[in-house]
Amino acid sequence: MPKQQSNKAQTLRNKEVTLDEDEFIVSKTDTSGRVTYVNRTFMLISGYLDTDIVGKQHNLVRHPDMPRGVYRQMWTEIKAGREFFGFVKNRCKDGSFYWVFANITPDHDETGALRGYYSVRRKANPKGTAFMEPIYQTMLEEETKGDKKSAPDRSWKIVENYLSEQNLNYNQLVLSLDE
Image 1 (cartoon, rainbow, N blue to C red):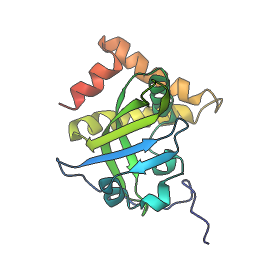
Image 2 (image 1 turned 180 degrees about the vertical axis):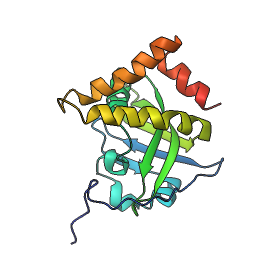
Image 3 (image 1 turned 120 degrees about the vertical axis):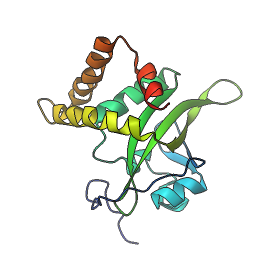
Image 4 (image 1 turned 45 degrees about the vertical axis):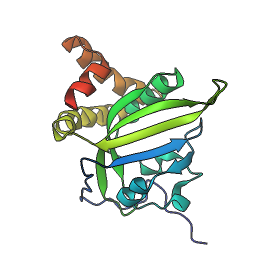
């Protein structure tokens, strides 16, 4: 059986795959981020079959242009039982990319116990991606400096500083960019 190519070793392509307005990518993970379900749209857009990704970490589709600080904040929010909204650039199996507006929510069973997370993603507003790209680039630059362990927190501080200057919270910002 051939060894699966690692996320970092995969060749990137400067080709964007776009979603239609009425397409929704849906996936579910367990509490540690291992994929338990993907819908047909996920498979069509990403190029991964369910057999390629179920049981693997969801970050298999993480594009290297996405700062780790965004994911640190996402995990902080969803582990606290809150929804996370954000603009996310993902990588397709063939190295292409696609932008989505993501909504990630905790999934509880009938007794209230956390069993995992739902992620529903739709076409990202180009205004939002154009706004976020330079911020993400600045975050990525920060993540290359100093201590690697603290890099995600340092890069997220860039977002927090911007939000403070604008007197906004993160959800207000991303939701306004998605209008």
